[in-house]
Amino acid sequence: MEFDREGELVLPAARGKALRLKAGSAVRITNPFGTQAIDTWAFAADDMSEYLSMENVRSFNSVVCIDQGVALVSTERRPIITIVEDTSAGRHDTLLCACNPAIYRELGVKGFHRSCSGNMHEALTEIGRDIPFTPAALNLFMSVRVEPDQTLTRLLPASKPGSYVTLRAEFDVILVLSSCPQDVTTINGPDRTPRDCMLEILAPGAFA
Ligand SMILES: [Zn+2]
Image 1 (cartoon, rainbow, N blue to C red):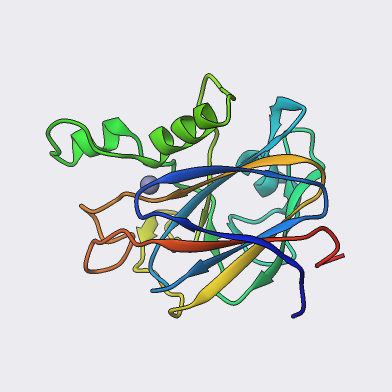
Image 2: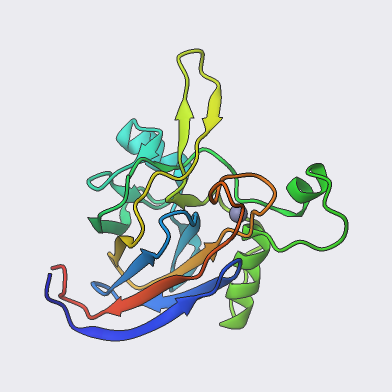
């Protein structure tokens, strides 16, 4: 697809990044190995108390995972971002919390370990923003299956190398992405290795 490329940057393995996206602009997130989970948050740029809400997304769409076409609504139940391209295996998770320091303590990690929750707060701080809690994340490229008995199974990543997801801002937003630092479990692949991903900022109108 043709687009005006405004910029390209690396989302380093196990790190987070906050992006200011103008209404109509988009970011393409490419997963070079297909294995890297990307925890994703979106906040209204002019009012951080409105944000992409997994609870409202599930309620609004009557779904538990995300494919292209599902309305990604905010706490005000209006679309805040939209998946305009998705070459991944889809079925992006909405159910699991962002990893956090307590999870790594449960897993036996001693001392500091980077986490998606920590990455989100760190990334917001870098652009002079703050939020006093961690909303549930949209877990792009993460595969979690609801079993017939309603338990959850964490699956290995199912996307092909080089697959990508493109998110368009429906109004001015702050998008926060975290390359999940999980290296104890296999949620980022059987080799338990967080990977760099590529971000391309696409001009407004590229996906009008
Ligand atoms: Zn994580």
